Length: 338
Image (cartoon, rainbow, N blue to C red; front, top):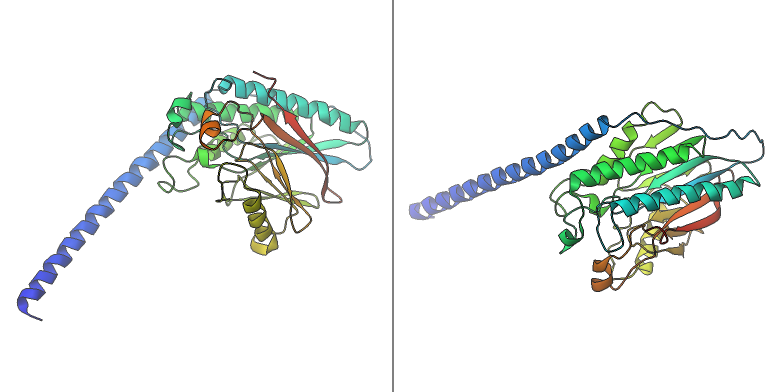
């Protein structure tokens, strides 16, 4: 190799090193900016929650019957707090979730005519906030910025837990985050930096000294919910990548069957949201996938671009913890609450 060529290669290598260093500095600067954004949003919301008045924890009426008790399972998901449409807003979301809590109490009272129902498991399924950068044109359907969405969502979760504590002796809360809760575009920040997760943390701190509440923090992209012998997989639903405008039943079953084959810990049923529609699918292991709806309404993006819409709803089940199975299923419709 000639001396001239060696000098040329050294110059090219130096230029590549300089370019890599510039890229590394730019990446570090961008990460610092997004990290600061996440911390600022969280800290502001945390300060707002700390100034909220102390909550009063209600107590349910004692049930001393010794017959076999069942457990209520509440799947609350896809609240999209912050979305603004002709038929949905933060106030509408708050009213519909309040009605959902009331119906949980009403249906539970019917169950209790036959057997005790002392405990409740609340499954928070993700997409509790609307976010600000999930799809093109979303800005036109956003009522509040991330800070306001975070504070409103945390306070609504807190109220729902309080309402459940008025009905049940104990409440277990399970977390799952959604795609709407992420900050920035996909991949810009770690998946754990999520507004859903921040809202869960803020709400959980309000019950930190309450022994009747057990809060199960999210440790992975899924949760295995345990209610006695009953085991269920809790996911959000965006893990299914074959979405084409309607609920992708085949894609859901393919993934759920794969997960149940030993990819994750053993489970019978699976609970998910994401699609804002109601569906139940039979898995190969004998369990089922329960797809739960959303309390939102008049989603113009969904109607125009994916030709899909759902009727406002949430899900309530009752579980036999001894036999490890669901004994009754209820869809709570919420479209009558404006």
